[in-house]
Image 1 (spheres, helix red, strand yellow):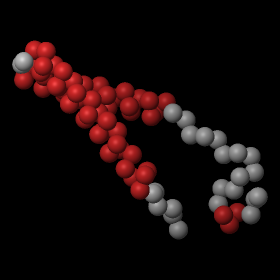
Image 2 (cartoon, one colour):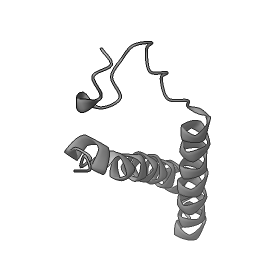
Image 3 (spheres, one colour):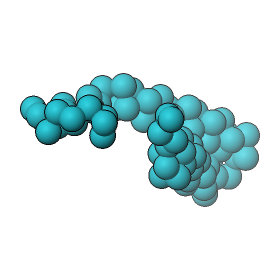
Image 4 (cartoon, one colour):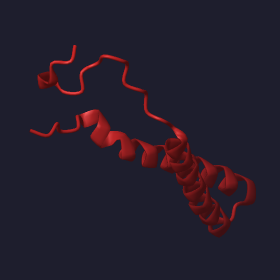
Length: 81
């Protein structure tokens, strides 16, 4: 039987989008307070969202998984303690 991903692994993409969304809203508020132009603030919000998503994606691609230690079981029934 295939192992189902746990709730934490299923929620990981939502967390990344939420981080990008929060940073985009912060940029929107900052640009709106400085320039008082909603159009410019909206463009800044969209650009910030896209840039943050791309940076997170590049960082995730650069991350390598840990090596399996020597002698660790791959499957419980393999018997290779």
